[in-house]
Image (cartoon, rainbow over all chains, first blue to last red; front, top):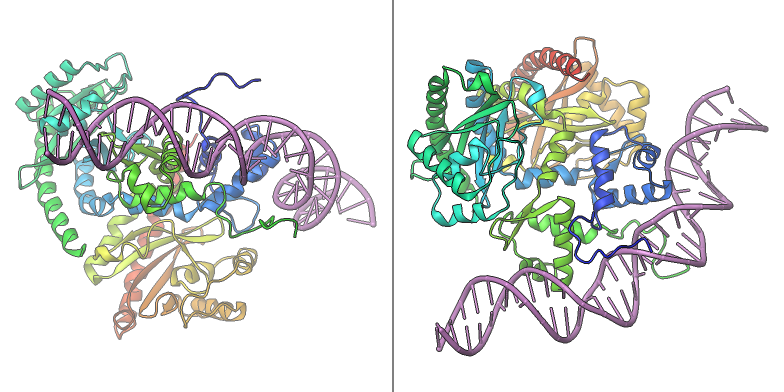
Length: 268
Length: 268
DNA sequence: CATTATTGTTCCGAAATTCGGAATTGCATT
DNA sequence: AATGCAATTCCGAATTTCGGAACAATAATG
């Protein structure tokens, strides 16, 4: 009778829950994770672990390593992501420019884009490997906290903005605010200054600045951002940083527009 | 023959089969696929489609678009891939060099690496978007056909090679051979010439050439390859191409070794 | 503004699946 | 040979899924 009420319990792992746990583990130790490892690390009976792994393999999410005694990720998984995220060509197009910023400033910078009403990271470049985990392609940037999201949302029509604000806005640190009025005032400030900030609203010690990337037709679908330790980002050289971002942003806008046109031409 | 559903039936979709079908569909129309679409396209009852979609959402593989009336891919999916394929830093490191080749030769080129006994694409750059589908990161290169796989496998110890040859070797075109003896002679030829070829063995009209990337310690874990239409790749300028690949390969070897060292240092 | 289509969601019994303990096979080491 | 360990198969009990039908919510229409 251990089954509690669980009517429409949102917190339940769902049918795929354990499969995902295993998959996550496989991803953590690709090509080196054995059945026994899964069994003991997740405290699952050997039989169950075995069935889950085989299920993943059959689904194409995982595959057995050549030795046969280990598992790693399946092709289907990577294919799914790369097929969907057409940020692929976008990365090719913009990486050099982002790298230029790194050389000049030594800070992590990234390009975000509006996708399905959300702002997600499209391309990111960092001088330090340890930043990789922070801004990964595909990660969503909340409107009420991230500079890059503010920079984009400040230039959307009312409907898009309203939808975004209707979503639950996360509270991450003590500096995060999630009341609609505040967000709107923040966006107004962005429109006045021409750039957006995130001051300890996602991580206490970190700050980010972002500028909108305005396409030739006047639309803003992307933002270019730079992030790093709060003191270093928000120091007296801030105006210079903004100028640099704006300059690169203008270049990117042209490249993006051209890229979209070429891509469209090929999609017949 | 106990029952109709045979016990170890390899062709069965498995428990995740229908989930994957739905996920595939979501990936095909990200942010625009509605419940009804899934239901009718996969000929599933509305109820079933609904349950599958919710399951995917709960697992983090999909998520509802902001409007609430559509679905797109979840963050977890992209995160899994990007976290696993630590080709992430590798891409950062090598993309510029690959792009240089594109500028010089106008052909698709890519870097493969040995991962868990298989050769998989790590980074790929192409002048033409339409090539994207061909060589995508994560895709496996068969030892008996792909130039990049031959280039790597030619320099592995006997055990590794034996394991690779023990795998089922795919026949893709009329030019594909999959007998072990032939593969070994092909690898011997690679060691003599210093480069590997794939002449219509994966696609009738396409060819590829690849050189091993020899790391400072003498190990070969990567290959650098160029691919394109058969007549264009295998023409009289072939020696020049090989030279170009070798030159870039030497550069990459240093960069890779350094990158690995840095990465190792940070993993404490 | 009322009405009608359309789409998304909940309910629930029947059916099929998973669950995991125990026994078996296969592989590598001593 | 013999042993130890990991992977796999077997199978009854229990939980889950399956999908038709009713229901609710939203968009389209008169």
